[in-house]
Image (tube, each protein chain N blue to C red):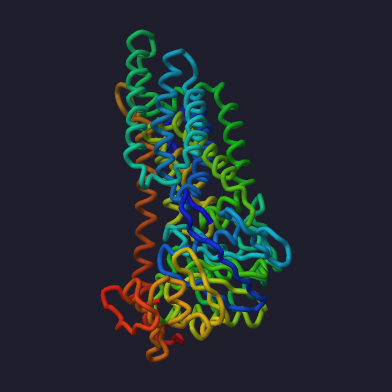
Length: 261
Length: 302
């Protein structure tokens, strides 16, 4: 993957199974969003392929659902949560919306599934970040995709909403057999939910279960220098050692460079 | 005594310029409201302002060469829509300087063309009529043109309705769903360019965005549904235009020399009054709802 003459991602390969939950983890600027957009077909890879549902090449609806990181709707915009979700059904079609009982039932059903019935009739622009996130997930789900891609769904959320969104996504993957792929710079809220992790750093990626990937040896090899994976109170901390250090050198984590990730 | 004769001065409905003004302003108000609701949702009122400046230069040029101002408004605005799409201006953000300079030059050309027109031709009132509008001088022969342009814009918006909403949420999301986002974008900009052109011959280039933004902003205070907002904005726009025309006509009848207040001022003033009156109940509603929400919130499971 080359962007503006710079190699952003190179030799990244992973697969996701139906009903699985995959986290693309990496710090800001690591290339997570680029990878996500490649899967979506918004960015063309320099070489390599994305294959979804057995067919090569990016596929459009209803195979892939997408939830962008943030929507910038004016607080006053006359668009209710249920209107936005309805656009997930037929927003790509020309002409105006034709209301029907079937359409309304589908929207009500999906509203209940993401626990958003309470604010269904409120303006989207006036909802909180967590509420908007749930509405956008419902928007993506209503077209019954087989793969759901989310760009940093937990950024800008407080701990409580972040937990709710992860639980919701985990349930959707399991109950509906939809493969979920999301990007995050912090893996901690996702640790118990992820089936697979794709850890991105320095333009490369390693993938596997969290137990396989989030280890001092694996991540040190990926970063090209020694990093220490510290488990503490059910959380993971990846702390940088000094560049060029040998693998067996147990350097104490250097606080100024340490990175929670 | 007949009350209506006091409110509506005699001769209002039989007056030919008034009839033309009522028809042209109604079409303009509806078209501006329909386009304006999307302008507000998409956060693109900046593009509307750009069209009002650029179109002004076009209309001034048209006056200079003896053509219809509407032709100048439409030609330059549609061309500007194409350029805007080409260089990808979505919002003013980050392009403040370039935008400011280009629009400044456009207004400068208006000044030049209008100076030349009023100095070397016999179009003495051109400056005021282009920049601030003169609805009562619109030729009745222009009505069919205005109607066709209006119908075209309405059809365009009806076709692009859902993709416009989808792209306003997030244009990459729309692209993923297979929406041709550039085509939808240029279609919308052309609709906006034409709406501003129509508004410009009604209330003048400089005031044209008042009909584009004012009635939708009023509607947004009163409803949270897109379709209802469009209907309310259209009604508010037409009401403001007709009330403005009536006030302007009445003030002319009252004054000794027959010179009433400018119709553009009257329309814009009514738009403003509507907007302010719509803001009060919503603010009151906030306060009332705020009190109700407190206990409800604590009952919700966290």
